[in-house]
Image 1: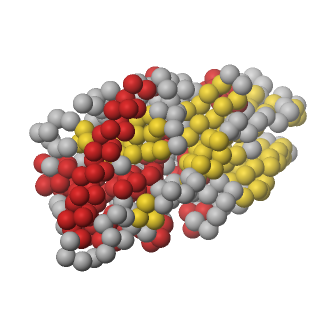
Image 2: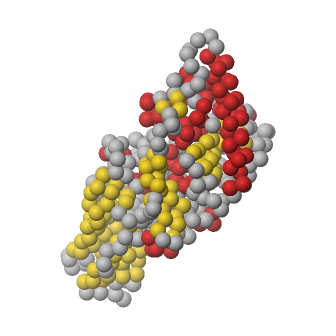
Image 3: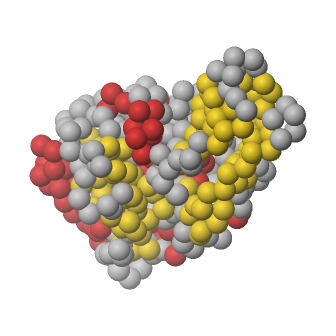
Length: 388
């Protein structure tokens, strides 16, 4: 599902060519059952990372019509049959799916299936933490015999972002998945853009003015920075981080550094402003285009949110001053981190350029809307190094 290990392998979630360049890594990391042999059929199930399911990875991938063999590649079923073709029906079922994933195929020789799991977001929204359950995989043969394998798995909630997997010498960088939490079509963005009172034409001409208007709107909303512990798992195999869904940030009116960056990036993307998330150890901040004619990128420290204080006559003045201070702090933070933002220090140091992520196939969640195939049109990808 993701650009992993190196930038040259960063082609995750492409509609029908998921995880190109990562197959070797996935094989190195699989949780495999012992091969089950019945007549001439052998099969095994692989799950990466071992025993863990992250529905957020599936929801950020645009479905390809009715193709059920176009999943993110973290769940793989290896089949090996005889020379004569045999009809098989493969089914994957677990709690939280709209329906079991079913793949019908004619097998002769070997085949690797990547089932696409259709998650029910209404169920996932109720998950507070990871939930242990069974994942059942069955293979029904032409003669009616059924082969079954049951895996003990943990299903993770939507606000948990898996961004790195380490196993021995193998490394899988999933940091580009953070772009899925940037959702310009979320209803929260409707409210935020309306409160900011800026349109797309003005935003494209002056990204700084657009970001300032959004910042002041968030101050009026009463959003404040909260230095909560966002890290959920920090190894040795799984590295994951909590990222609030936009509705949670908006309603709770609190945001850690990544939550605030994701929310502002969502509004700016809606307005046509190029954005990026900048990740450094234990922290994240926002980058955005200053405007079509400005030719450079601005950076913003969202840790300054919530400093405007009381809604009195001087409120807007304080909010503007806070925005300017956040710009200066963001620029200083970027300059300190820049030597390591070269693609060789991921995932601790990374730039998640949102248009580039879209070109890789990472779409916004659009949580609560089933028509995820109506994805926004991504602008041309910009290389990570294209920052002044």
